[in-house]
Length: 266
Ligand code: NCD
Image 1 (cartoon, rainbow, N blue to C red):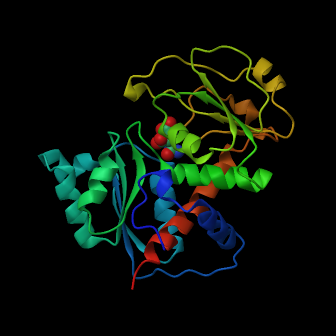
Image 2: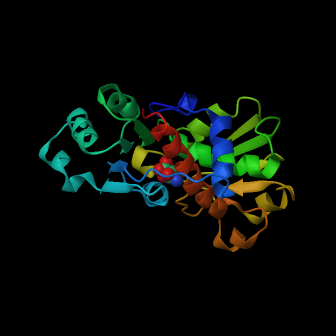
Image 3: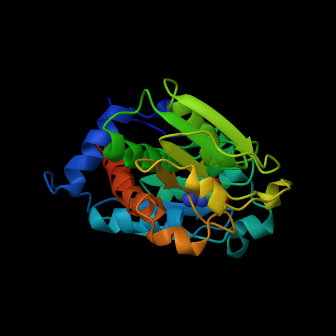
């Protein structure tokens, strides 16, 4: 059974999507959704999520209607979320929604006639980023259990952290917030995030030489981006850096997610 909506990472059949992403990446399946129209509806800024969904849709042969800044839509005239969702569901076959408050994606799904994909709801969840993250981790270690994962950054308000934490129940996890200046524990994965100032978070941190010295040789350093000062750019060429691959994996995984959603059709 394909997903109807993707609101929480709990809605995703992770193994199925990892397999499909791998088939897509290795050109083992050909997908054609050329009659489908996707709506990108973004109430918060986005570079990677909105563009990778658009790119994924075009690669599947489909089309995209983008409302990348709701201030130029009827939202600026006071239209509520439910009416906007019903409207875009009339014109599109699925809606990718980024919203400002946790719980809004679920609210949208409740009234929507077409599938809703949560592209981040306030400090709630961000399931497609997590699927991209899981694909990245799985490619590296060929498993998603028995790993040690250290989250560094905005634990409270980072929605990517919330979804990834949920998706890794059988790993050893450490959480280091922005005020904790200790040396990081030895881990397989270091998952760094930006301080979500727009959600009232404070503090700052920077990955320093003394942290990097303690990162094992086979470990990987991930970041959903955008980065601020967490990771110095000189680390980008380090063999442990995986954040640019993570972006590319996001594109492939979004193709897998869209194909899954559209496979529901009679
Ligand atoms: C994240 C988000 O929007 O939650 N960005 C993304 O989608 N890759 C991370 C962030 O904004 O810090």
